[in-house]
Length: 338
Image (cartoon, rainbow, N blue to C red; front, top):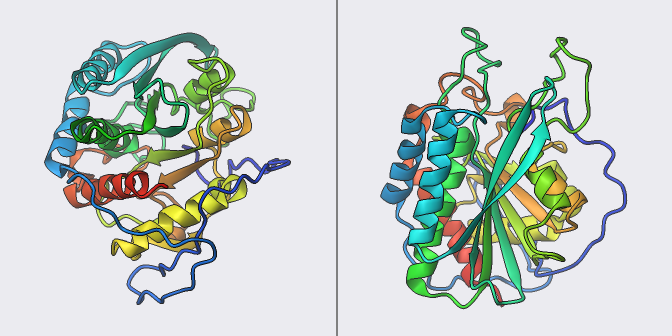
């Protein structure tokens, strides 16, 4: 994802399609939760599978152990094979979408978008996404800026939550149509401060841009989508991200309401960020699917966590409790749908 200062400020006409809306009742971290009145329909807690944080943690570590998943490298190829094998073993229909893209530094790569379908014949679909590549450089670190980093949280955590979710959904034999898309080459973008090359538009999220223009099924549509980005760190704060609120506020409010009812209101706060460039932007703009972003962001500091695009984004920042919270929340959201 892109740091503040690289927002998409040209969001034009928004098509508001109501699903189930609710005003979130969670307050900022460490403040008591105040009850609010439902606007449309209260989302009830329902029984769900038990998300296994140990399994998700092991999946993060497996990705990190391959090495940085930089496009065009052996760790990248090996990790793709690992993810595909895991998802297939859980009974999902898995395909790899290949496409040729050019990065801002005039390099050409063959991307690998990993697409997994559950109950592919069902018409009503839910889309869950993350990116699985890592940025080639720790350009926000104070040392070794040109060297790669592990990407345990930035990439690894979102993938791990969705892989474990795939296992849980298959075990429960849920009768819902669900798609998991793990986008490639999300993090190979140009920072606004990079003067080595002329500034270019849309250099981030190349995998989601490619998929949105070339969906894996003609006319593909999902009722809504949820993107996970940096969802495994210690003491996270998940505010209401600005692009999500611009395109799909009713989905944000519904998910945050479920989080509050599960006791997660201190982490899923009512604070709002500016509009950010992440994979969900192109899912909204190009694929016309209302998609939101769950991303760790320190509102008080106006920045992502300290390890963002730095060498400290390693297994030391991963917390099983956070993986558990996010995974269990997604299960509750899916199972509570009408």
